Image 1 (cartoon, rainbow, N blue to C red):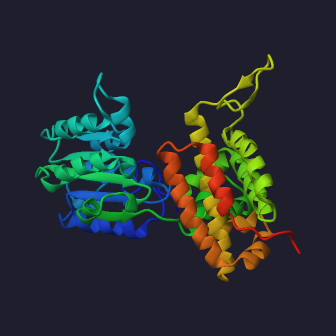
Image 2: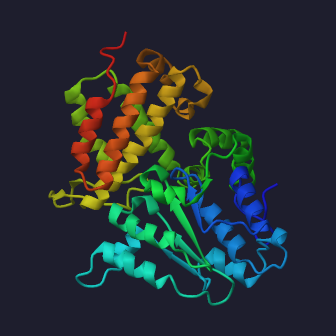
Image 3: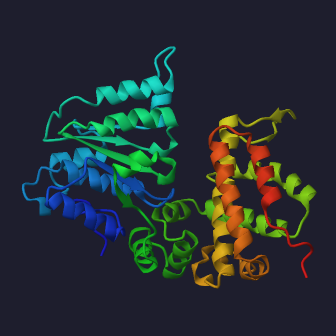
Length: 373
């Protein structure tokens, strides 16, 4: 049964190990000074974080009753309005800079401001979202703060990829991995909460790879699934095509990726009503390229596991029956090498590499089978 808002306990689903670690540490008053909530984009880190904040700030007397989800502190923690909760991210430091102030200086200033005493309870909780997106200078400033934490301060770092954090930050943090939800549990949740028919819920659970955030996006915006089907189908087709065809496909892929959430939501590259050229802002093209590499990464992983004789783990096969045949012909090692290249491409796009050029590098590295036969 899915817990309802107002009931005691965590409201998110899955994550049995992370829950057990937190509950046990909180009950024994042995919570570390720094917690690291990490997991892939779409894994449900946000929902788990809200549960964690409610647990940390709840006013219920018995530790075993936290979060009670009934007290004012629980409600304010989940709404991110609690007076002892401060939150930031590399994006907020960039956007909140004073005139002439660097992002690093803004981060240092914010970290200094968090050192104040708690107002309403025994501890102040400091959350840094997208911590793995912070540059090395900011991470070094954060490390200095973590090395000398106040006795009444607890830091929560949230990251997609903990490997992008400094090793010294990771070593000072209690990791809480947010991973895929067991398929049966996710199917049950989709049927109960999203009112999906069982057959549709089963497909969504498999295609999403058990990531609840991604599954929810697919349910609420079916065009996302249709777009991923088209994109991955094109990428599978490009396995048998040459460099010219691959490069020629990139502008169209970027244009369509700019609107998977709805054609009216983002500008794309194309023709305006008066016949002029409409150019998408660089930030939009970057987001589009990252959407492509995210779906590409899922496809490559599924090809790799299918080639390793584990087709039941290849969620994309639900949308692309030909995937298993392609996987057999390519093999797992070439796909493993490609995944390494693709990760470098994603990192480059996030650090302002030209999206089209970055995708061209990906097309060059994408395995080639020659003409099908």
